[in-house]
Length: 108
Image (cartoon, rainbow, N blue to C red; front, side, top):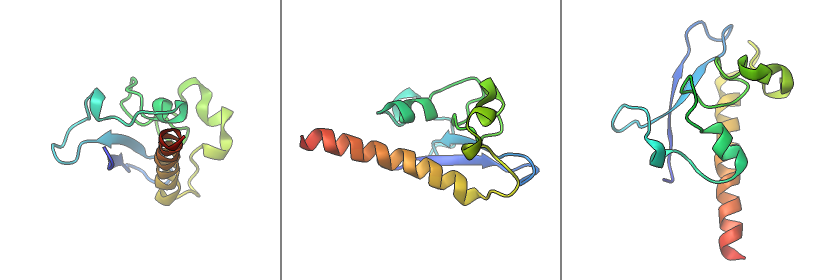
């Protein structure tokens, strides 16, 4: 896929971190395994299908506390001073870096 959809729960935002899920917008459902981004380690870790079903980033409502992710990576942890652009820039960076890595391998 070249496009990915996301669904965000913003209950009590910005005091509470958003909950962000990869989402099949056309069929209004969680994506199946083949619809998830694949590639490098960062992509695989971010978009793995794990317990809460959210993307696996320290700023996420469920991932932040899981395994102390927010404490281990404070530069990526959620705070009420952050905005939604922070989240989607982070996701965009991960997806684009994966595309560059694949393009580099193909050209080599």
